[in-house]
Length: 427
Image (cartoon, rainbow, N blue to C red):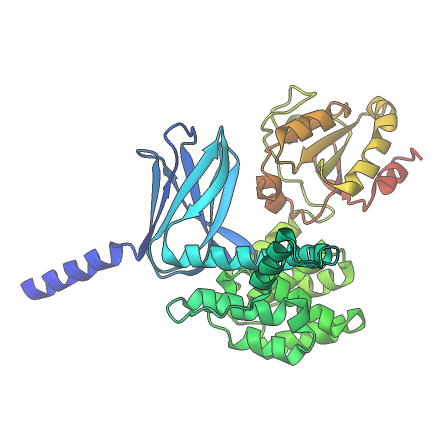
């Protein structure tokens, strides 16, 4: 019995040891206290845990094998950055200015290599074409012309890196270049993409490639064959499997983001009718859609820093009707649509109709300047698409509108500001 007990104790101790750690260092004058670590499932960030800074350092111990993209957010200063895990220790130093992270320095081998590859790819995509154009005007042997030639040759070289010790970097770059780089993807067929999705290991879900590859798949098929294309893919993957359900969830979100309501409703209905055990990923998609259907009670939201109200939450706002609008100061459609509500707001208030704007801004100055012209209730977490309400209310685009009754039941989901004004006969 003693030997068995010792063996059990040994394995118990082994299982609680971290597979790897993530260590993040910040300057001593950086005021952030908290850091939140996320893993990835498809296009969804999955919260792992939150840590508090100790001696200017956050240390996360990850308890199981994980290879793929990760993210850290610093919630109080509204910073975030991405990195990769190859199930080995990650080390990061932050360079900051005030409450902003100005530079992320990757000290471990995998992230340093990945960062160099991506910087090189970005230069090839954005800088090389400009240098080639400039070279047309400098064809002589001046020092500047020679320097241009040197830089063009440097950026034009297709370097081949040795990824034998870096499985995730090899997986990501090989498949990104094959399926998502325009010059390489021209000859990719739907069957190529189906086989890639079907045969990939778990790195597909953690790579951030799944959603853009699915968009590429739909584009290869053409808009006239969406149903046939999706059914072909789901049949091959077997929609009841975990991967099939993840792909189904991603497709529902894609159709939502691109306002393809017919297809969203078709495949959301298919998801609801599945008889197998539903994964957490698909269950979340089904729930968030159900929560914002017409007739559902709009989930309450506690304001962060509300303007033009004393209410503490959305439910505290008293009105016969409420117009909820999700918007951003960087959204061109919002720039065109929201001013149309300003001239109608006084009349709306007289009819006990209140507008509540929830902004997906990140820059406080831009947000503050914009809402100075908006007389209705405004609030923002200043976290952009990382705001809590984007998932809570299934927001995929701005502006997005909801109309609620006095009891916060959803009674309409207008597509545009004109539909809002039409609903209230204000045109």
